[in-house]
Image (tube, rainbow, N blue to C red):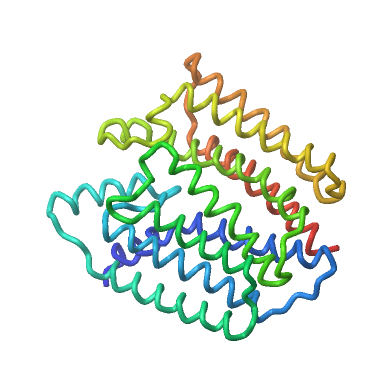
Length: 302
């Protein structure tokens, strides 16, 4: 296997999205620890392995069927390769083999969780939702990726469900802290997706990819991005009102100056300001991942 082929396989794993799954899963487990529950390493590791193998397997399955899950930071390179592959009408069988292997491992891990008694009704329902929603974005003839709501499904899959799975495998039932701590991250992640797709906006129009940004137009897309960022921090404020501990939420607002600058900068693009993609991408990553890190650090060091 050539170095180019190895790099292609790594990119198709979606490292950014896998990192998101890992840190949000650990955040969910951390909420269980913060609430005084003993952390059992067995369901923690099996659950993490389950969510990663399933995600990798479904990512490759989507690439095999040319209905890819959101590619994040590596999308432009992959689009060019996909266009070349489609012109040759060839399908790389290795994607299917990797997918089948990962999904088989996921099935075994599900069986282990069930036999070991770690699965409750709630955790099983959330894990099933993770699988079904993922499939809705990649299954041919059903794929919602270009429906205009695919971005919402992506954020639910990557941000809302992983911490719920991690928490429920430890505790078995929901707690309001889980809702209050995770839901504000949903609009922040949706804003990140919009920025990543803003970079490939011209290519999406050229090849008629009906993403949410293409359907809205880039100017309305920027407005939606800014609204999502503000909504995320507003929801953190609402969480404080509903009893979320100050020590968990207050550090998140350290990110507000960065968010304010990005909102101002993106708004200035409509007036002809120069586009600096590395800066825009970096600020967007900070606005999402820094709050995640701050909350995760707090719940784990308590």
